[in-house]
Image (cartoon, rainbow, N blue to C red; front, side, top):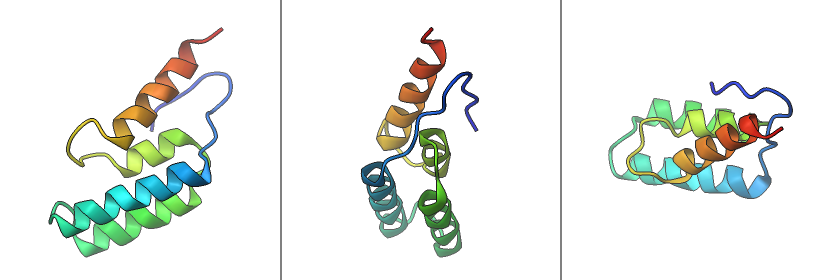
Length: 80
């Protein structure tokens, strides 16, 4: 998980929904097993911070939602 000093970026419902859609695409494309999909969806549904959502998307292709969430979390860590 990405450590953020100061305040963690709170995950929004919209971010959770986008993460679950990305996980569904990963399942349909054969990039995730069903068991992995179910586990990551559970993580996404319970996620309070954006970094947790980014971790749930780890290993999926491209600079998609997971990469954007990681950048957002890292940027927040460097703000005064």
